[in-house]
Length: 498
Image: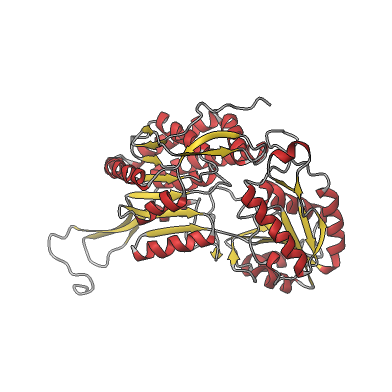
């Protein structure tokens, strides 16, 4: 495969439809080989002020454009992304490290989201309802909120951005977007696509920089009325607290400690496939990654044996190589965190069956690689079974019954995704009812969300809002009730009722 070359060595902010250079920059490092891909701005809060000023002006005009016409821009965005899918995929792999097959899937998710949300331009449904008085009409409509801020993570640098920006834009808002400093290239490319698709200047603005400067300025800015954030729990809680003080709407999608339940009647070969994909895809760096396998004790040993065999077949390296199945860890900090949890697992008494070490031989030493890791005989209360590791580490937890499996699954502070492998239809329906996660899979792994369903979780995973699906519109719109009285006289609700 010929590696795509970025058309610039230094990125710039995208404000009011123009590229605005920033003096301070930092390198974006390819985690597969340690090479610098591009320089990204480290903006100050003044750049946020400039972007918001442009967005406020643009949003007023954008909101007056009929929604079906706004949607036409998203259709063009989707088509441009489709034309450039391979280029975007390769650039994504270069900045993020995920294998090219997964990168293509992520770009496709953005394409799907463009077409799906463009369809909302002819829906954006409200409601009509009977009024309680004669000659009176009542309805509710969605109204844009104004200027919204989106803060996106490095692990899905284009998919999550489209989950947030596309519904915001089709609903009539203007967007300030702070992408992760580790993965800014997708933001640069998407800004170019928006511009080519005819989105008016100022409707989307990209400000690169650290969360402690750019993100903080966005959260505190009086004219940004919505913050949609995906990232760590600690940061999300801080954002929620500050937005609460400002009575600013906030949508949070944070961590997960997701489990695959394997019952005694499960198809073990299928379960192994689901576990491998969920645990080691994106090198375990997904909020929906499987990091726990809750397995019935009667099939525990068989499952372990099959997992070990298949784990040996996993190829590890630079994701641009089509034969590679597991790519690098995003950076040294991520690698160090994984190492710490390996030691914690050993100290807690879990048995290490495979992996547990950094990979440094030959070209792997140029990047950040960690061997796919399997612990067994973990207990539900161990830290490795409770805390998010964000790496290719999975722990097997044996249980005696279906009821215990449900209890173990629910016994963590997170509630994003869960999965059960079973042939018992009664267990299936009990599981989808009793598992306290926002997403439930049956006879599949813990990953694989589709854009037309809501994405998000309960408990420590979020605050009740959802990305993706029509429910994403709730984050970026306000409900407005409208009453039209055509009686020609004053009618008082609840009073002038026969």
